[in-house]
Length: 164
Image (tube, rainbow, N blue to C red; front, side, top):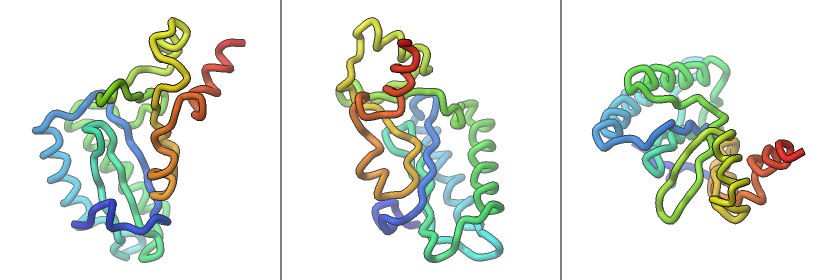
């Protein structure tokens, strides 16, 4: 199975953030299910050059080199169904886009945007804390812009709106 590092920088990525850190047994199950899914994942009948990896025990990264085969609407739908199936099986949320993940030391924590706003305004986190931009769409962006200081993030824009 290919690794994310083996795919070219133009590869398309989708990031799903878990509501909690995966346990070791959940990671093993996810890896086994991912391998099965990738072995049969096609788009318009064409096999794709793809991988699924879990980073920081919290982020599911799906990557596709679309120069080998484009991830069409039906192919993307299959991947979303896979994620939804994993949510049900593991009893974990992977599709909540209003969760903010941030680094404290070498730990990655997550909370709702509303709770993160409380942390910010109570000065428990500041504009230099590292947050995750799960809206990146290519491997190159994942490498350069996925982890960034709060002051450079979409989350900061949301906090600024909340301050008005």
